Length: 558
Image (cartoon, rainbow, N blue to C red):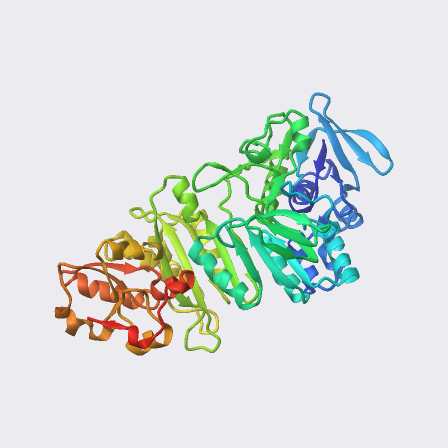
């Protein structure tokens, strides 16, 4: 059996090495149009920033090493120009010319390419780059070393864009980020992205959100925004997303779908028999909705490569879909997500509830405990878990990984408190943030708590609800208060219930939502109509800092 694989890196190389382990007799040829068949593309921003100092560390494997260990015929600088499904041949262009290559099975792993929207003046720009592969990173680092730029603009505030913003800042550049979406990290919900925004601003990165780059002037040294502002830029990185490299498949008559992604069945076979596709170029099923989606991440690509090798070797493996688990470091803060966000849930027409909890990444009494803000999205009746997001300085990856595993395992919020996670003071808490998120969600599912979200505060107040802040007066004086809030400290609440009106509805808040939940339980059992503000003052003040009053004499008392 002769298997030809178009494209290396995560998907292609995983397929090739797995297939060799399953079939020593197969002839396996890998075609890579670039000079490097196996490199760490996720590490490229950190090489730009200087955290990775040795360029050779980016090269995971060489053709020579792959041939020696796995007997693979790796052909770099060899581009697949066309496919003839009837003749089962691929036309290849190499440094030595063009030739046909026969196959019994063909695996397409072409990946994705940076999406660069047509922009006036882009063709004349000499300082605009994208980042997807080793030649890209070489071009950027060479430009920095030769031209010593002082100002950089990153267009796009997704994961790669923010990683590059951080690393260009580490190189000493004055960095500006431009994002067309209303907030940075569009896969996150607005209030969770607000923590990342705050971190960027504190580190001196300038932000423009809700606006796009309209044109380039002066050979790219001026970026003109849609609002008319002009940004001086010695170096600009375009990081507005990726598109599947599906032209080869399309010209061969292979069916494609959304954004040109290659359509495959559950065994990764395309519309043409004996031609398979994997990685960033294919359309997968969002496991939580069953809808088509595209998830350009290394982990799914590696899994798909292994599975398609199993299929070709005669071992049944099905593509179960993906949930899209990702993480990013932005200076001293980490943001991670898994599953669906609120916008996706609304688009899918799913009922859901959200809960935000704040907890320490290890025991609070042990030195160095850092706060994690964890958001959990779930079905309000069944407790099925739809997604989660978290931000913090430490321990974010562990919590999102646990919840991603719970989603993949079909667990519900009732199962989260049952998870027995490692605990010792330097590593965690006896009640882990994941356990606590489960407890909070169960309270909502079982009707012990009725919550409101940060974006509902003004509407509830307009509809006559009173905002009751149960923090202490000194705490309010030091940190500020929300508009229209009245104050009764939690420890005084039972003795001052007669000051409240049972004909009035109350939205209760504290710092994080824990004390206000206690207040909610006290008041409900005494006949009051109450909602607990999910995430409370800490969340609201992060996403709407302009609304916070900070003068002690403005505190209202009932």
